[in-house]
Structures are given as C-alpha cells and as structure tokens.
Amino acid sequence: DCPESILRGFRMKPNIAQPLHLAALYLLIGSAWILIGDYLLEAQGQPFSSQQHIQTWKGLTFVLLSSGLIYLISRAALHAQKSLQQNVQTQARQLLQTQRAADLGNWSFDGEFHWSAEALRVLGQPSTNSHTSLETFLSWLLPAERRPARQALADLETGHSISLNTRLNRSAGQVDVWLTLLGESTRSNCASG
View 1 (spheres, rainbow, N blue to C red):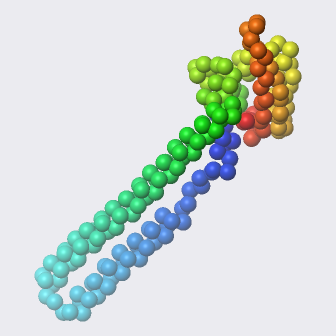
View 2: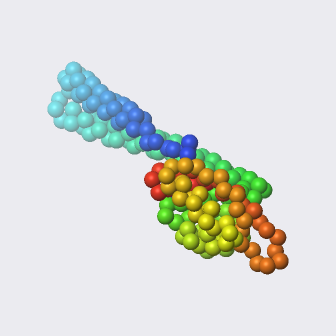
View 3: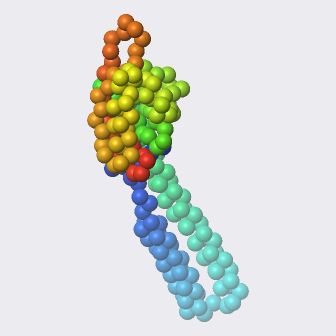
C-alpha cells in the first residue's frame, strides 16, 4: 500500500523537542529538590535521626508530587489524542460523503491496486475486490480500452502522472459507464489517485 500518497500534506513527524524539554525540566526540578532540601536540612543542624525522618518524608512528597504531575501530563496528552482521533474520524466521514456525492474514489498501486470503498462502488465492484491485480482491473474495462489503460499505468512507473478516460466493461444492453482515472507516481513502483 502507498499510505504516504493518501495522507500527503498530513504527515505527522515525531516532535522529540517536547519530551526532551519535559525530561530536562523534571531533571532540573528533581535535582533542585534534592540538593536544596539537603542543604536546608544540614543548615538547620538537626540531629541525624531527625534528618533521616525528614529525608524520608521529603522523598515521599517528591514521589507524590511527581506522580501527580505525570498524571496531569498524561491526561492532557490523552485528551489531545482523543481530540485528534475525533478530528480524523470527522474528516474521514466528510471525505466519504464528498466522494459518494461526487462519484469519486481513491486508489493506490504498489504492484496491486488498493481501492477505497467508494472507488469500488463507482467501478461497480463488491467490497471483496479491495485489493486486485492489474489484470483484474483491466478486465473491468472494455477490451478496446485495456491497451491504452495498460500503457497509461506503465507511464506511472516512470514517474509520470496520468489522466485516463476509459469505459467500464458492462453487460450487453447496459449504458456505457465512463471512468476518469487520475493518478501520480509517489515513489518507485507506487502510485495513487
């Protein structure tokens, strides 16, 4: 499959800066907590047994506060992720509605075709045909249309884009259905439209 062609312009690059900033901040605050706390305890001149007790409570307080911080950050990240998922689902639903209204569908080719549900509907094919060979696709076209279609698809492999108007192979007596196949090469042996 050629997923990068379908999501062109929607690439999500990992942002390592935010986790690094968070880890650096945690390191800074944790180190300051330990060093400043130890300095203040020593400056008070408390007996050693009392210092040990205070150190234990200081450590437990730090664990409690950092656990709370981790919880809040995780909750915010989860909320952001759910929001992104809802946006993607909404956009997918809108794309499907638009494709249905316009009789459009999308496809990718990486040695075999991968058809969207709407593309299969336009082609008059069952959803079980979501992955097909080039030969299977060509069999869906009128015999006279197959050679030009094969040539256009071969042009995709050389990096050219295609705009192919062709007719679907229908039973005798059915109205001809014209199909416009638009596509572009996305990388070696991979195309989409």
